[in-house]
Length: 332
Image 1: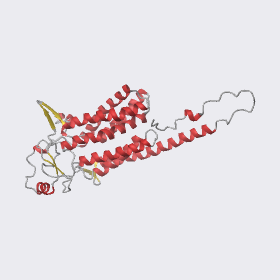
Image 2: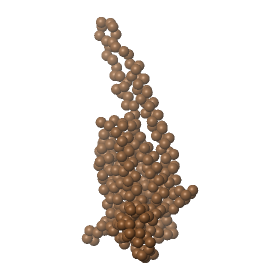
Image 3: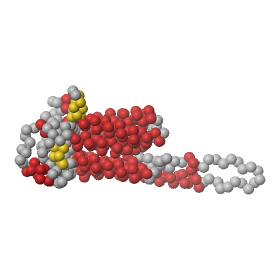
Image 4: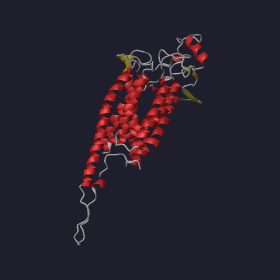
C-alpha cells in the first residue's frame, strides 16, 4: 500500500477535514511506523506480529494442545508451519485482490509482493491456508484434526488484537472520513496510508473496530469453551463469528472497493465462509448427540447385580461408559 503521508497531493491544512479535526479534537496519531535503533530500522507492524505469535502460542495454542495429549515439541511444529503458510496465504490473498502501490501489475513490481511492511495482509487468506495446513499436519502425524483446529481458533483470538495494534500504528486500515469524536487523523509523514487517504484528515478507525471485534469474539469463545463443548466447536464458532464481524466492519472500511451488489470482496468471502460454518456446526452438534446417545445405550445394557448363586460371581467387564468419551472436550 502506498504511504500517502509522503504524497504532496494530500489536502492542505486549511481544508474542511483538517479544520474538523482541530474543532472536534479527534484522535491524532503521530507515531513513526518505523522504530529506529541506531542504524537499525524495525517496523512496528513486524514487532506486533512477533509479539502476537509468541503470546498466542505460549498462552493459548500450546496449553490447549498439551492438555489434550499433544506433546510440546509437536505443538511447536504445528504452530510453526501454520504461521508460515498462514502468512503466505494472507499475503497471496491480498495480492490476488489488489494491484501494487505503484499501479500496473505485480510482475512489473515483484519486490512489492513481499513488502508486507507497506500493508496488505488479508486475514481470510490466512484462515484458508491455516485450515489446509492443519488438515495436512493432522493426517501426517495422525492427530485429532479438531483439537488442532480448536487450538487455531484460540491462537487467532489472542494474536489478532495484538497484531491490529500494528495496523493502527501504520494507519493502513481506515474507514470513510468522519466527524465522530473517536475519528482518527494521522500526522506522521511516514504513516502507511492507502491511496486516496491523506494526513490530517479524520477517518473512521476501522483498525480499532477490527481489534474490538476480535476481543468480543475471544470473550464469546471463552464462554463456549467453559461449557465443555464437542471438539471442533471452537473452530467453527470462530469462523462464523469472524465472518459476521467482517461482513459488518467492511461497511466502514473505505479502503477496499466494492465488487458486486455493493459488497466488498471480504464481505463475499465472509458470506461463503458462513455458509460453510453453519452446516458444520449442525453436523458437529448432531455427532456429539449421537455419540452421547450411543454411550448411554451401552451403559443401560450392562447386567444388573450379581447372580444369587452362593458361588463367586464372575468378574464383571468394564462398563462401556468408562470407555466412551462422547466426543466432548475435557476441561480438566
